[in-house]
Image (cartoon, rainbow, N blue to C red; front, side):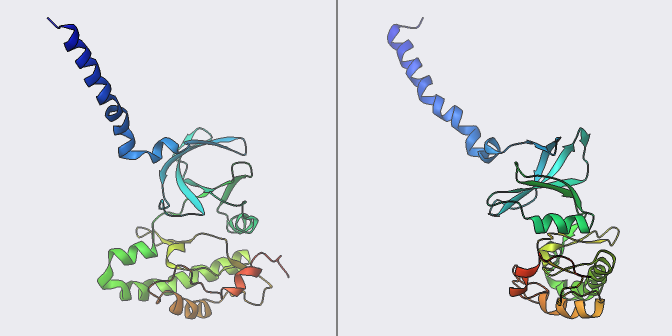
Length: 230
């Protein structure tokens, strides 16, 4: 039999535990509670899956899409800008290389095709002792792909750092991503010959820390949005 004093003590003990009970889930992953899972992009419902960019990325966040317009695992990703407006230059670049799917100005989000494989940066990190051999193997093929895109679509990627090169090791397919910085055909810096592009890659990819390195100069990025001149 519980006496009144015992009951009072039990109630106080339970109240003392409540903050711990409610705080425990937040201590494991509070960020998930703040994340939106669903977006409406150009009238279609996009449900996000795994986050692909690190939390430290301050400009935008990229998620793999779990579904798009009711279709599961569509092979798309969504890039959501945290600050600033959508970059029209990037949208136009994605359209030119057939990676664009949809855009929504209100949500500040772009849906694009997902590149299959791993980034060159991750590949080199996983094989630190064989980095030189990997670069020797892949640089000519990366240059060939950049040249192929330039010839076929009239657009030359000038930010070919290790994060922007994705390689599918099963098929050997190379995908160039992050089309914010490029030259269009007619620009003085435009290139479509693999040999010249590879000479640039020899410099860029041999730099240990090159997140800001590119196949074009920093100054040249200011004119990447120029219209095509034929």
